Image (cartoon, rainbow, N blue to C red; front, top):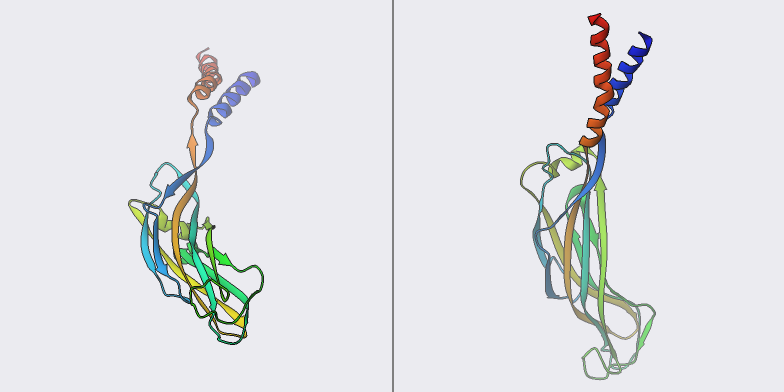
Length: 235
């Protein structure tokens, strides 16, 4: 009796153990990427603003574990400075140009600022009478830069807007800028920028799977245990 009960117990445990959990990620991209050119004289307002459409997580047999919103942004253009003081030089101590790019709202707000940044102080002599951001009293820098930012959450309340039918509208915007500081003289800054952004949402989830070949192999000991019970009580 003890031996038959042991066989029965092993068979039942093996049948209960055929279920396993698998983890995976589903990547959903924004339905559009965008770019625009805009003058960037000083810090500007919002130069472009759009809504990116991303599919929600709609898999009833899967369980969502984490949502990650990732922003990849790029900016290119030129930034120039000219000393327009007729008699005095200027030393530029800070000079930058590019784009501030942001996407999302609430907990999944992501932002970054690809662009140009002056690496060392720049001395410009007095104005050469031509405001072209070149020559003796001016400098022009071209740039091409990219950056990324991401936010993740596993909280049920944070993930709720991403679950169900339809799409999630993720607002995105870009702001061009150029500017700096100088000691002495009269520095004037100008430039243009072209910016773009791509948003992708990563759904980390898990699901229960039953590997059929293993299930069929493990079914045998369970059936043997049940046959043992029937024979025992049939005698």
